Image (cartoon, rainbow, N blue to C red):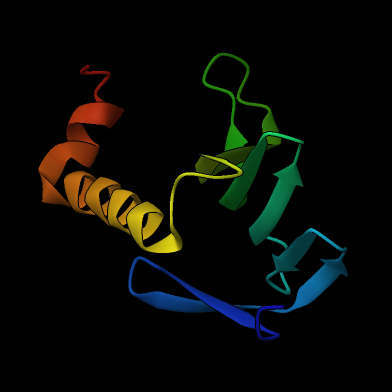
Length: 116
C-alpha cells in the first residue's frame, strides 16, 4: 500500500491527499478541500491486469450560456493494460516512461488542441 498521505504537485504547488478509501485492489486519496483526488486501482481477470492511476480536479465554473455556477470535474489518468504473462515490470516501466516522455516533449498542448 502507498504511504498515507500522498502528495501531488499541481502548477508547482504540492497538494497533500490523505487516504479516504482503502480496498484490496484500490485506494482513493483526497485533498482536505475536496478539490483534488488521486485514485489507484487494479482489475484482474483470468488473462489480463488493468492498473489505473487517476488524478481528478473539481471546481466551480460558470456555464457560459446561463452563467449558472456548478461543479465541474476534469480527470487525467493512465491505464496499464497487461497480459498475465509475457511482459516484465521492467518492460512495462519502459512503456510508461516512453509515454511520459512523449507527453512532456511538447505534445500535451497538441493533444489538448485536438491534434491526432
